[in-house]
Amino acid sequence: MFSVLAQYFSRREVELLVEELSSYHRIQGSPYLEEAGRYIKDKLTEWGIEVEVYDLPYSSETPPTSAPIAGWFVEDGYAEMLKPKRRTVSSIKDAWTAVVAHSPPGEFEGKVCYAPTYNHIQYCADSVILTSDWGLGTYIRAVESGAKAVLVFRKNAPRGAYPYFGLFPLISELKYMKVPALSVPLDVAEEIVGYVERGEEVVVKGFVKSGYRDSAYSRVVEARFGEGSGEFHLVAHYCHPGATVNDNVSGSVALLSAAKSLAAAVESGKLKVEVPLRFIWVPEHHGTARYLRKVLEEGRSIRGAVNLDMVGEKQCKTGSTLNLVRPPIALLSKLEASLYAKVLNALPKAGTFSSPIEVPLARLSIVNYESGSDHDVYVAMGVPAVMLNQWPDRYYHTSADTIDKVSFRMVHSLGVAAVASVLELESARLEPYLHMVYGLDTLCVSGGVLNARYYLYGRVSKLLGVELSVPRVEPPEGGEVVGLFMRGYLTSLYLRYRAGLEVLERLRRMQDKFRYFSTVLTLVGVHLLEGPKSVERLRFEVSGELGYEVPQDVFSELLSLAEVSGYVSRWA
Image (cartoon, rainbow, N blue to C red; front, side):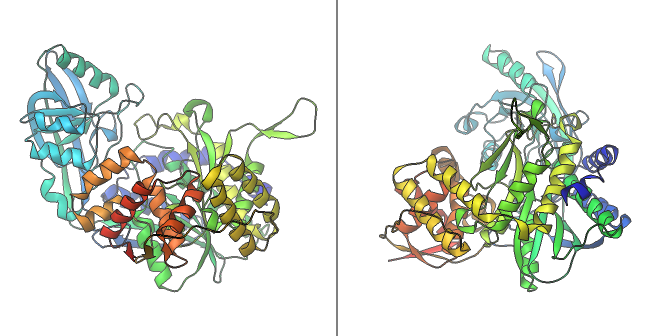
């Protein structure tokens, strides 16, 4: 089947789709994102594919993932240094990422104060603040300190590139959006910091022309093949700044190219689609959560999902590895076995020195579940969802994420592999795949985490009906009992919606102490789908999934954060 779909590859067509879709400045809540959604819908219609569009208001609440978010638009933005010399500091004419997404409008002129950390912001009153310690909390502290504007840079960004930052204010937080915010290339920031540290006065002047929208829609586009219940979803988010490509025009075009190839194969009689397969383009997390809630409330059932996020990298340029990010062990399914086999088949290969074996010419890795994209929303609802993702990418979230870093063949091949993994699911060999990942997962850990993985694999192998020789382990019990109060993917945005801005400081401390906290919160929700559990048993299971023992104090603090949002409840 892969070979049937692969024959429809057209380099020029994929390149054109990438060029056209990336021309839209696809920031969530903006009219340009809605236009990009219309572009996707029009392409599918042009190819004769059945399409449905869902315009889901950002002003709605979708617990525990999304909350009422402000719409936004931008027209222009610019900053220049006046002293000690004249030069451009930031310009939207250079890159869409020059204006921080959701920045308020305004003009400014003032002396630059360099704040290397969040804690230094308070000493920069009545200044233009330059910082690399970004976050909504940093911005609000700058406003409260009387800043005239905020300039932000990233220390690990490619030189000359504008980093991508956003504010994502809730509607209730618009009262804090008072001063312009722009991003600055690393080399420019270092020049300014050098002047400041030598005691020279740096004066910067600039403006942002932008505004907030009363009505903004999270536009989800769904293409349909096949009928019946038990759908499979192929998902890609199409948001993010204009002219940036791998994140995630690459995943979106992978689905577009694969959908067109599938339609052509069906039309010519070469293939039949005998399962309900849906291609879905979403605004990341916020669109996915609203869409998934809606379709599940309609009574539609979903058997599995594949998320394509940053799949087109030229690895020789970006330094990336293609990662197959698994769902939690508790949600292991035949779909991930099928996808792994199809991806191996899709990658370019070469023969070895003296055997008939072929090896992939692209780097490939299997990664245990981690949060960070739209597969999270499915996983948190108990749907087995696998992600294909190229990481790390040295140009990630910068204006240097450009079309010259994309492999058009990789884009098409991985989209087709995702389709083939669903259409040939029944022939997938689950047993050898299960033995392989079990071996990988138990070779690299020891102690309590190893016992937790024995326990998890023992349970899932029985559920799947696959014989697996696993030592018998009983989970620990003890502590309070935890129950899931609200199904879904818990985000920091929803946390601050429920708990207020006071929670930002707790989240900042947690990020500094334990950077895997978002993944842990999702795993907590997944394992509580089975029903209430003792705190110690839950920590044991989550540590097994993570491959790292979550400290008791960290786990307790995470449960406390989850309680504040109404996500879980604890009792004696």
